[in-house]
Image (tube, rainbow, N blue to C red):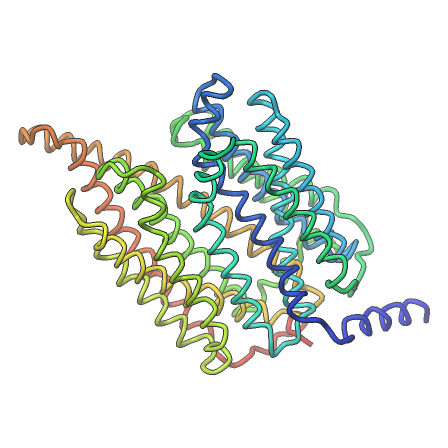
Length: 489
């Protein structure tokens, strides 16, 4: 009887009238800060290299280590959110990120900065799935699509303004301000979260899956290290094969463990819902396509056309802003037409915008690149929120945290896979074209021409990849599936 009363009290807390706008702001701020921290360091790498008098390959780990930690700890949010409540977990992660930012700013050598960036990444890896989970557990059902569109907009705006924001801070101050500015924003996010996010726990896990935690951390770390370092080490090298083999073994042990115990770290039964599974696969495919463009187009603008990193960011900024604005519109369209039409138009727009980028020339205008990147970005905006919402809204509140953790975890892994794949293929295709062009005695533009041809090859591949998403679009029906044990109550 006592347990029932506790659960009733928790349910009543979630039924109290919500101050929706402050609640959305509280969730928005954490997600925004987390994603902003993931890419502001990029533009500071040359500055850090000079500051610490070390190699670029060393300071690169301030980015690589952050992303590894982010991807590694994302799967843990589901369990810890259930165990301690998502409000407490979210606030704890915000506090950890803020403290880690202070430690990053105080670092006096590269090793310390890398270590504290990894700590910061671990907390950011918890913030993203925790914030998504709260949308589907706290926000009323009829307002979830609009709220999710705002959450997606934060995911888009942060990477969009990150390079420009970081460049301005470094130019007018110091690299340390990339971290000091997190402190007041982090404190503000914590205060807003404390006052406006309601406390609740739907179900407390009976036990802690230690072996599940250890195996998922091992699997995530080894696989992400393989994907991020494989091109540098060589895909056939002993280190790469050892990390890949260890990661796959740890992943197999994790999956076996999760399917054989009563209280797993991650409830893999969410994959029994075909609609959720289809949306996860769809999101992984389109994110590979999206990040391939975020890799290839800046390489073309900077290495071929000679634009600075800041200029490249400004050229692409309108496309990202258009995507953020469209994301806000999609939330209202979703209520009217459902996911299927939006997803179909979105995938087709991504393909239509990607294909012309396979016809780049050395002297292609910035307007041409911006036009097709904008078309592609608008397509992505039509996919992200509907796919995320269509899958998550079918999962019961009890398992939403696990579904969110799984979705973010797999997206991180597949984005890393996509970046590694396209980085390796760009190098090999450029070398192949250079070898053929040398036989034809092309002249001084050999490097620029071969790079452009390599980028065009990969944009064709990227277009084919996004077309593979179409079958999963048609698998996402507008009507809800009634699948026992995982559907929303």
